[in-house]
Image (cartoon, rainbow, N blue to C red; front, side, top):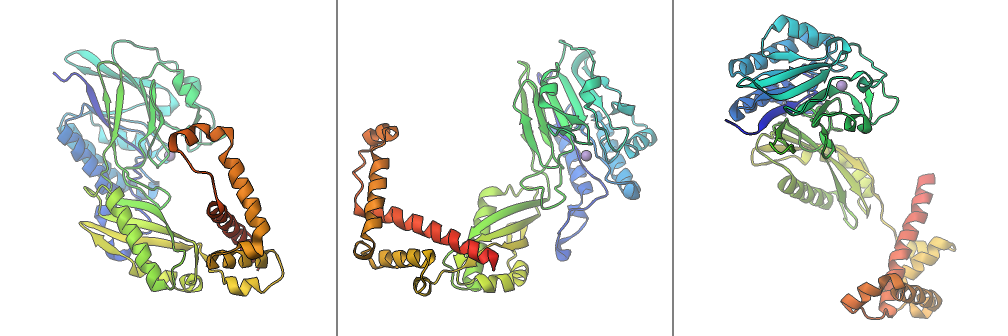
Length: 433
Ligand SMILES: [Mn+2]
């Protein structure tokens, strides 16, 4: 006999929808939420879990009802065959379609909880003993303005773990999608709250009760970043609850920031971006189920290639793709947030604050700013020494035997500050132009 309860948990399947921004040449049915739902079902069967929990929004919208219905039916039938019960609640997208599907399927192992917005408990037994109680609530209209927890009055139990299943908007006051507060979840006797609605996965309360969003098993747009997939929830004998994500999604969206400061032309920029993305792919991606990684690139820094990047980023988006093992990596888009490089000589000709700073930076580059900028170097030295002797740094000084700051330290500090200041001045000017 197994000593712990293990369940597979997912939600926000949105069957009938398709991930956005997929390049045409790579698109296909294997990238649909349906495909990931069916691999989730297979995972549940392979792991021989005790139960599958789905926290609402199974169906995306009514005009794809038949596609969604077929896929859902297929998965439920396979789980039924394997003797794995399914607990499901309705969300704001399927408040009307899910009850219909459940009635049509007529599967004994399918437990639709909370019909009509009435809390309902279902108990899973093993050898005639309860091994878990599931408390569920379902949307019965597209919008719900009150917290479903206002109506929750199911009794506390002590013979088996108690698990809440709810589609709701957590800690978002005034939401029209069943707003609930963490404090309300903490006030219940539940050991865990398995939530639906937010598509990005994440643990919201660490323990007692554990509360988390499974996220969509397949991400559906570039806002839904990082790894996606269903979770295993394990209820241990000692009352602890463990949650682990299984990255079954075949698509992944990410955002990578690349600093192209000092790059001379778009070719060099392309090489730098390419290296950064390869680094990201190698360090971040679990490539087991992944087929397509779509990266949004955010370019920053001052560069001579600024104008060329603005002109050419569309063609770079197309050209930068590559394969890494079995994963196709493509650029979803490039945000060019770079600025033109600064011509110090040119700037220093003027008679304003920027010219003064440009002159200072040129003198620092030449190696001896003391002659023309002695006062500022002295000021900087004074400031650096003052910081060095501050009481707050006593322990640091004792441990590291830091030496007293000298002219070189003062000039380093000055250079950093001058660059930040000049950059800010010019950005304000460029912003106005
Ligand atoms: Mn929803």
